[in-house]
Length: 279
Image (cartoon, rainbow, N blue to C red; front, side, top):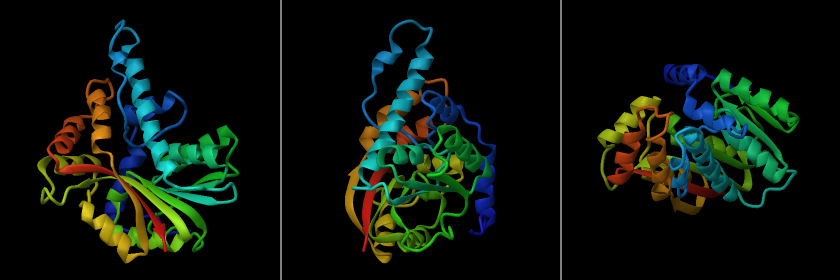
């Protein structure tokens, strides 16, 4: 398969996720057994804050999990008419949540890739427990050079993982793996070109997650250079703010919540869904 770690930076990212035991990922995943590594969208049911103090935190955790699951559903909605005989690639698959949802929805084979051995082992164990390990598999591999056969995927997605890689290299790799007419979807945070350079809040997010948030324009430039033609662009910024407002009041705060809220509200940061066809 691929050379997994190709730079000291990637080694630091892998080390971060191999050591990660964040309750905001683990406790939310325990609600349904589907573990995500992304944020949420949609209106919050603020009634979770009402009622007795006992159980309030559990209600908040369940509501946050509902919102992050809604985000994954929206991404899968944009993959188009996937058939059971198709194959999908989850690039930066984390603990496997979106991959399992895709298999449940489409009945097709799904491959997930991560440079974190801990994430891959966790996801493969859950595939075994779910009885789908013959159809949903996770690989310790670099999304920039997976080693999979060219044109072998009907769909590929990145869910909040593009900020860890060079976009030109990423979309070149995806374009090679996608069959002609195949669909690529990403949901990502990007900084707003109109604002200028990354704001202080965006820089705080970069430092917190050891990532490099790209400008909005870089996505469309790299897609155009690699034969990926956008078919849908959805600004999710306003839809994700309620998730962060709820998370900022929860027991699983990480200290980065205010930076996200500041960046979204001042217009320096945007949360986008981009779907594109490979031509």
